[in-house]
Image (cartoon, rainbow, N blue to C red):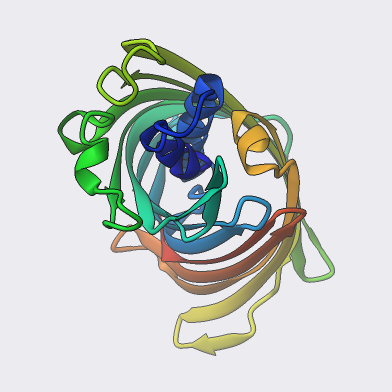
Length: 313
């Protein structure tokens, strides 16, 4: 996210003597990773996240689909994952460059698409393990409003044809334990995800002679989450359909470039799943859901709303 500030440090280099190239690279890729890490809700989701320590707001939209195939054996089956995401990062902060305050009014746009799959293993009657991977492609571009003598044309060489391409892969694992207790379907889930991103940035025409030509970038971010929750028994029935609720709490821990740039190492999420359960495999949909959630941490404030359906093919 700090790339929003650093771009203007590049552009205002007539008064600046030293440029933090490495920080700019890490920030650029952290922005890409944030679009993937924070838009991982099931179904169609929309969220707003404010990184308070760097005065940056990210608006995110995501479609995440997971489909389990017929069993390979009694305890195993394959699954496929699909992700489509968009994030809009904005900052209106003032940056001091050698005594001159630049008022920023811009946004960094990220588009992400990914596909992958993996294996689910039923370890016991109440628990299962998931292992998988995903390949992700993303494009990042910037929109700058003319302000304080800066023009959007000044950054045209930073982004090839308005956007830069990035390639990432995600490796993930999850353990889930679920069982009935006094009418409640209680569960706990432990997730781990590793993101690695490769990209190239062209600095040649921005600050000639100060920064190298084409720079190959590598970035890594890890996220671990522990979720505790339960699903209620039927609250309301209508014919053969019924309503259930699922409150949950989640602790999230972040390492790598995303944590370094956003200055956020951990945050908590509290949410409520509202499920409208339909007859089994009715049109391949066995329930519809809506899920509001709130995230808070040292340096992060977030609101998210997911809606969608669970499928069974």
